[in-house]
Image (cartoon, rainbow, N blue to C red; front, side, top):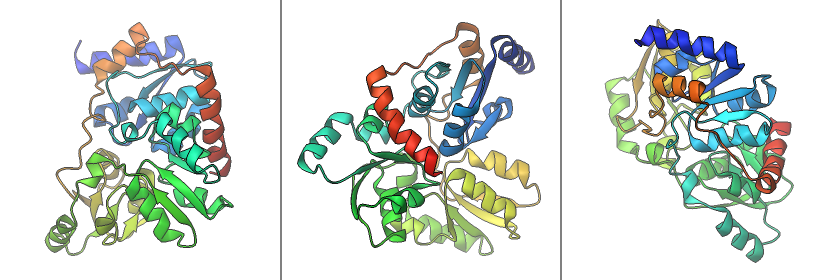
Length: 303
């Protein structure tokens, strides 16, 4: 099949099997175009609970599909690229959190949604980059542990100085590699541009930004702004939507290193095969799912 024929088959199979395709903003353009819903982690988590589809084809990475399964246990959730993982999510595990809870039983754990079901199960509440500050502000405790992203945790600490946040030593390898000097070079090259960055970037980069937010917040900010030029400090996948929705504006990637290879693993052929063979299905043990559901549900109630 050529690309157009495959797209037609995907559309046919979606109707035949009552399936929906959810795609993250970092997916390749072809996937974003075929998806029913494109968004950041918060939006996709919310949509997973709303859909009446029998099958959710999740075009993202493993923890995202896993979250959809936790929230919608009676639906079949498929991850088209079975090896699409997240290095940051792998930087913390449930066993280490159990040890922390034994040593510090009175300190609540806030976990970034970029984490495994086991980690969510050991946490008190989840958050995404778009609601992290709101979630932490809502907590009555003055001290908490934030896992696994030290950069997002550091950003939250700056916004809520009255809270003491213990930072886990994890990070997004894609955002963390961006250097402060790259911001200087980009601003010198495009002096009229606004710098929009993701809070997964390190503090030195975030401090030089005109706006800091999740992928959807960055897109919304650029859409509303009267400015015509932007330097984008998050994974390159967002450029597709930005340029599509703002043909009169210019967007430049802050760093050539802003490519998440796990997010780029999903292809149209992966989507097609996922629908044909109903592969690769995400499973979560019921005991873990129930505990993880609590932290995700608390997040969604506050969002």
